[in-house]
Image (cartoon, rainbow, N blue to C red):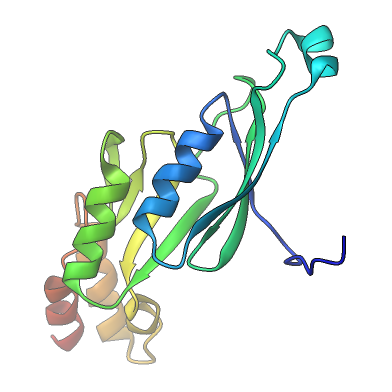
Length: 167
Protein backbone atom coordinates (compact mmCIF):
# COMPACT_ATOMS: atom_id res chain seq x y z
CA UNK A 1 0.00 0.00 0.00
CA UNK A 2 2.98 2.33 -0.38
CA UNK A 3 2.21 3.29 -3.97
CA UNK A 4 2.55 7.04 -4.47
CA UNK A 5 -0.71 8.36 -5.87
CA UNK A 6 -1.42 11.49 -7.83
CA UNK A 7 -2.73 14.30 -5.58
CA UNK A 8 -5.80 15.04 -7.74
CA UNK A 9 -7.40 12.40 -9.95
CA UNK A 10 -10.37 13.10 -12.22
CA UNK A 11 -13.20 10.61 -11.64
CA UNK A 12 -15.56 10.08 -14.58
CA UNK A 13 -19.05 8.71 -13.80
CA UNK A 14 -20.45 6.43 -16.49
CA UNK A 15 -23.65 4.43 -16.51
CA UNK A 16 -22.10 1.09 -17.53
CA UNK A 17 -19.37 2.04 -20.04
CA UNK A 18 -16.36 2.73 -17.76
CA UNK A 19 -14.20 -0.08 -19.10
CA UNK A 20 -15.18 0.59 -22.73
CA UNK A 21 -14.34 4.29 -22.32
CA UNK A 22 -10.99 3.58 -20.63
CA UNK A 23 -10.06 1.16 -23.42
CA UNK A 24 -10.99 3.70 -26.10
CA UNK A 25 -9.13 6.59 -24.46
CA UNK A 26 -5.98 4.54 -23.80
CA UNK A 27 -5.98 3.42 -27.44
CA UNK A 28 -5.95 7.06 -28.60
CA UNK A 29 -3.29 8.66 -26.39
CA UNK A 30 0.37 7.63 -26.24
CA UNK A 31 1.90 6.77 -22.85
CA UNK A 32 -1.46 5.42 -21.70
CA UNK A 33 -2.58 2.24 -20.00
CA UNK A 34 -5.32 0.51 -18.05
CA UNK A 35 -4.54 -0.03 -14.39
CA UNK A 36 -6.54 -1.68 -11.63
CA UNK A 37 -10.11 -2.79 -12.23
CA UNK A 38 -12.42 -3.18 -9.23
CA UNK A 39 -15.65 -5.15 -9.48
CA UNK A 40 -18.92 -4.96 -7.59
CA UNK A 41 -19.46 -7.62 -4.95
CA UNK A 42 -22.62 -9.24 -3.73
CA UNK A 43 -23.39 -6.34 -1.34
CA UNK A 44 -24.08 -3.94 -4.23
CA UNK A 45 -26.25 -6.57 -5.92
CA UNK A 46 -28.34 -6.99 -2.78
CA UNK A 47 -28.78 -3.23 -2.36
CA UNK A 48 -29.01 -1.94 -5.97
CA UNK A 49 -29.40 -5.05 -8.10
CA UNK A 50 -26.03 -4.66 -9.83
CA UNK A 51 -24.71 -8.02 -10.97
CA UNK A 52 -21.88 -9.34 -8.85
CA UNK A 53 -18.61 -9.16 -10.79
CA UNK A 54 -19.66 -6.15 -12.88
CA UNK A 55 -16.90 -3.55 -13.32
CA UNK A 56 -17.16 -0.86 -10.64
CA UNK A 57 -14.05 1.25 -11.35
CA UNK A 58 -11.24 1.30 -13.88
CA UNK A 59 -8.02 3.14 -13.13
CA UNK A 60 -6.28 4.34 -16.28
CA UNK A 61 -3.64 6.78 -17.48
CA UNK A 62 -3.76 9.10 -20.48
CA UNK A 63 -0.35 10.44 -21.42
CA UNK A 64 0.74 9.79 -17.83
CA UNK A 65 -2.29 11.57 -16.25
CA UNK A 66 -4.21 9.30 -13.87
CA UNK A 67 -8.01 8.94 -14.19
CA UNK A 68 -10.71 6.76 -12.67
CA UNK A 69 -13.84 5.66 -14.53
CA UNK A 70 -16.79 4.56 -12.41
CA UNK A 71 -19.85 2.57 -13.46
CA UNK A 72 -22.24 4.38 -11.16
CA UNK A 73 -25.54 4.07 -13.02
CA UNK A 74 -27.66 6.40 -15.13
CA UNK A 75 -28.33 9.10 -12.50
CA UNK A 76 -25.67 11.55 -13.71
CA UNK A 77 -24.70 12.67 -17.21
CA UNK A 78 -21.69 14.55 -18.50
CA UNK A 79 -22.08 18.22 -19.42
CA UNK A 80 -19.86 20.81 -21.08
CA UNK A 81 -19.26 22.29 -17.63
CA UNK A 82 -16.23 19.99 -17.47
CA UNK A 83 -14.02 19.28 -20.47
CA UNK A 84 -10.55 17.98 -21.17
CA UNK A 85 -8.21 20.10 -23.28
CA UNK A 86 -5.91 18.35 -25.73
CA UNK A 87 -3.03 20.66 -26.75
CA UNK A 88 -1.80 19.86 -30.27
CA UNK A 89 1.47 20.93 -31.89
CA UNK A 90 0.27 20.89 -35.51
CA UNK A 91 -2.76 20.29 -37.74
CA UNK A 92 -1.94 16.63 -38.24
CA UNK A 93 -2.02 15.99 -34.50
CA UNK A 94 -5.17 18.08 -34.09
CA UNK A 95 -6.89 16.17 -36.91
CA UNK A 96 -5.89 12.83 -35.34
CA UNK A 97 -7.37 13.61 -31.91
CA UNK A 98 -10.44 15.25 -33.41
CA UNK A 99 -11.18 12.21 -35.58
CA UNK A 100 -10.61 9.67 -32.80
CA UNK A 101 -12.47 11.51 -30.04
CA UNK A 102 -15.43 12.69 -32.14
CA UNK A 103 -16.15 9.27 -33.69
CA UNK A 104 -19.69 8.34 -32.73
CA UNK A 105 -20.09 11.55 -30.72
CA UNK A 106 -22.65 14.34 -30.82
CA UNK A 107 -22.05 16.32 -34.03
CA UNK A 108 -24.30 19.15 -32.80
CA UNK A 109 -21.84 19.73 -29.94
CA UNK A 110 -18.90 20.36 -32.30
CA UNK A 111 -18.02 24.05 -32.27
CA UNK A 112 -14.89 26.16 -31.72
CA UNK A 113 -12.71 23.09 -31.24
CA UNK A 114 -15.07 21.49 -28.70
CA UNK A 115 -16.60 18.06 -29.18
CA UNK A 116 -18.53 15.45 -27.25
CA UNK A 117 -17.37 11.88 -27.60
CA UNK A 118 -19.69 8.88 -27.84
CA UNK A 119 -19.93 8.73 -24.04
CA UNK A 120 -20.91 12.41 -23.72
CA UNK A 121 -17.51 13.54 -22.37
CA UNK A 122 -16.49 16.99 -23.66
CA UNK A 123 -13.06 17.62 -25.15
CA UNK A 124 -11.36 20.73 -26.48
CA UNK A 125 -8.89 19.85 -29.23
CA UNK A 126 -6.80 22.99 -29.68
CA UNK A 127 -3.44 24.24 -30.95
CA UNK A 128 -0.83 24.38 -28.19
CA UNK A 129 -0.23 28.04 -29.09
CA UNK A 130 -3.87 29.07 -28.70
CA UNK A 131 -3.48 30.35 -25.14
CA UNK A 132 -0.57 32.58 -26.15
CA UNK A 133 -2.45 33.92 -29.17
CA UNK A 134 -5.64 34.84 -27.28
CA UNK A 135 -3.69 36.43 -24.43
CA UNK A 136 -1.27 38.41 -26.63
CA UNK A 137 -0.63 41.91 -25.21
CA UNK A 138 -1.47 43.30 -28.67
CA UNK A 139 -5.26 43.28 -28.32
CA UNK A 140 -5.72 43.54 -32.09
CA UNK A 141 -3.99 40.19 -32.55
CA UNK A 142 -5.87 38.47 -29.74
CA UNK A 143 -9.22 39.86 -30.89
CA UNK A 144 -8.65 38.66 -34.47
CA UNK A 145 -7.84 35.19 -33.17
CA UNK A 146 -10.93 35.12 -30.96
CA UNK A 147 -13.10 36.25 -33.86
CA UNK A 148 -11.69 33.50 -36.08
CA UNK A 149 -12.07 30.94 -33.29
CA UNK A 150 -15.69 31.87 -32.60
CA UNK A 151 -16.52 31.46 -36.29
CA UNK A 152 -15.21 27.88 -36.26
CA UNK A 153 -18.10 25.46 -36.71
CA UNK A 154 -16.24 22.29 -35.72
CA UNK A 155 -12.53 21.45 -35.52
CA UNK A 156 -9.96 24.24 -35.54
CA UNK A 157 -7.95 25.13 -38.62
CA UNK A 158 -4.56 26.14 -37.19
CA UNK A 159 -3.55 27.91 -40.40
CA UNK A 160 -6.67 30.12 -40.24
CA UNK A 161 -5.91 31.06 -36.62
CA UNK A 162 -2.29 31.89 -37.46
CA UNK A 163 -3.43 34.03 -40.40
CA UNK A 164 -5.84 35.89 -38.12
CA UNK A 165 -3.09 36.30 -35.53
CA UNK A 166 -0.61 37.70 -38.03
CA UNK A 167 -3.24 39.97 -39.59
